[in-house]
Image (tube, rainbow, N blue to C red; front, side, top):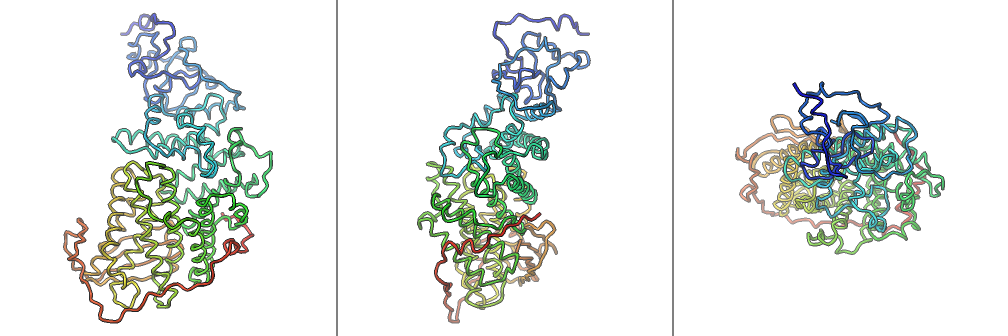
Length: 634
């Protein structure tokens, strides 16, 4: 039996000693999130008993029932299933370091518990120091997705990652705590992959922070009547997009847009009484920029899911607004207009060639915002100079070529041999190739665990376009894809390298998007290769094809001899292999030796590739058209 009177007798300690036994053993700071807490943040994170050094350490070995005392009332102690706090009375609890106090926002005991639940999900002091020590040059994500254009970086220099990642003091508004929790969750998802224990820990902590913020804040409409509330919902959408949950991302994004509309953010003139909880945020925020980012995200997700856009009005992108933007920001806004025009076309008639030609010219106009050399794939050496701008440049380029592919992909399976259709086919292929070059530049950086998994879907989309084009080219010189014969080997190299990066991502993390697309791309590569070595591969296109989740997806059947690919806004493509004569080791080795390729000498006179003939480059008014009516779907 344990002598309780001896075990609980206090020890003599040096004046000022406040650390618990666990923090002393680990030589870490012992910090309490709030003075009323019964356990320090380190013990909460480690799930260990927090025992002051004024008590004998042996007390931790006493059976739980023998030492259990009456807990303090919920109004005085933050408790949650994640906390293994120190038992005892308020008198026996050591005082932790004083936490800076400010005028509390919490109006009720309910919000007190919201703060406590969010605080319990926070990493401990030791773990937070490890997280803040991660070498990541691009901390822009920590300033939030809606906090101002890239050309206005002055406010970012006044913030440090350490300050952004710290738990707000007790009494902070729960929405501000949730905002930081979501930002920390996003940051942990970009945590460079090191050993498996660090990866597992960062993933678990990110999920815990995210789930608590969603459960307590973004699903509580009473707390979302502020700009910070909108940003929390937008961050929820951002995390869903990162994880590949595009449907959930769109649902959350639409909620953020409705909240913004209810506050009048979609109007040019904003009310001075617009609620902003943090005065520092009001000083640096651009309300027009918030609405721009919400619409931009909505159009991106709508294109990815084949959904109608929620806001078709482009008047907030007037010429006067563009005049104060940097060239890159002008390009972003023009690409946003193009995305909206493509969505409008897709809803009316995806095969409308006249509208397609007009939008093509808008993309030509948009590309002229930047110098020709800006469109080259950025050199890796540029990343060391400015990591944020390096990533941003590549992503804007990917967006441009993705829109170009989206615009012309519906004509990829068109049997017409008209000059305009041929132009669309070749443009889609060239744009797909440009996407993959930039995807490989992103993925080749081992330190960049890129936060947007939608890029993988775009890469699959581009890879599928290249494979389908070369399968069609195997049918003879009657198709324009026949003229891609000499590009086949290098194109396959691009697609195979893309597949390798997807496989690496799938192995190093629980990436459902990569896992789902790997099998499809693997099968498509085999079909493309066997189409050159004796197999008969046919393709059927169903414009009104439907997928249950309405995402870019597919299905393999008939033992790998049939592949069904669904492309949002385009339809379903059925690829069937009727005869097979291939090396049995091919499926596991991706044998792409030149012996697999049987060149066909062209005896017929080749036809020249016809340039796209259009009208004069449109003025700005043609970008926005007369789209001054807006509507919110869903």
